[in-house]
Length: 225
Ligand code: ADP
Ligand code: ADP
Image (cartoon, rainbow, N blue to C red):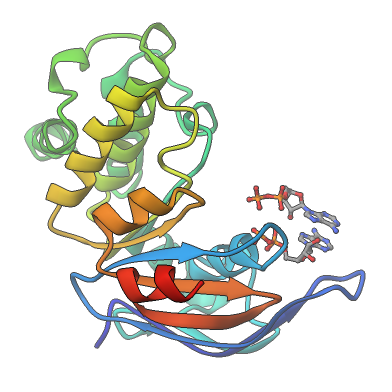
């Protein structure tokens, strides 16, 4: 099965605002996809459906063949690794090691298996050397990379990033871009940074007014936008 399959997904907020109208989307394993679109387009609403923060008013979402439902939500949250826009929403432990260990420990990993999982995740984002530091002593760019590691430590099926390049200086932005491009993982990135989409994602979607207005190779999607 594909990493992600969204079928006829429609959603209205309790106040009646219709945020999504029949979204269909398939992301194959290993694809890297940028999710573009103006403010209010429904990007956040769509992302919140991918890991069951919101559940489909209408339609369906499945991750590697497993449908998102109340009884699968725990496993879905392991499979869908969500990196928030603000790393400080994701880092709350005294050390980097504790933050990255939190998820896998919660899944039952212990001892050497846990230690290996933590180190491997930090190594993938080039942050192994700060394992014993306090997250709040790191730079913003470092904190964002550690936030990515906390998610990678769950070994998700798909990595979903909300505005990964926001608030980064040009050097940190490029460094993170190289890391993300080098990961062997299915990736969905919400971004307003068009050069980032072009550099990192072979495919882009434009969500506009709650519908997918474009879906194709990034270069073509950006040229037509
Ligand atoms: P984006 O992430 O693309 O900016 P959102 O998914 O946040 O778009 O919003 C899609 C639409 O849903 C917008 O019209 C927005 O105002 C509305 N919306 C978002 N959150 C809520 C909410 N909690 N209650 C009511 N309407 C909302
Ligand atoms: P983003 O930068 O991810 O697009 P927004 O600025 O659109 O986020 O929204 C920030 C928060 O405000 C979100 O939690 C969203 O659900 C909420 N929100 C957006 N529009 C509305 C709305 N019309 N009514 C209530 N909440 C909203």
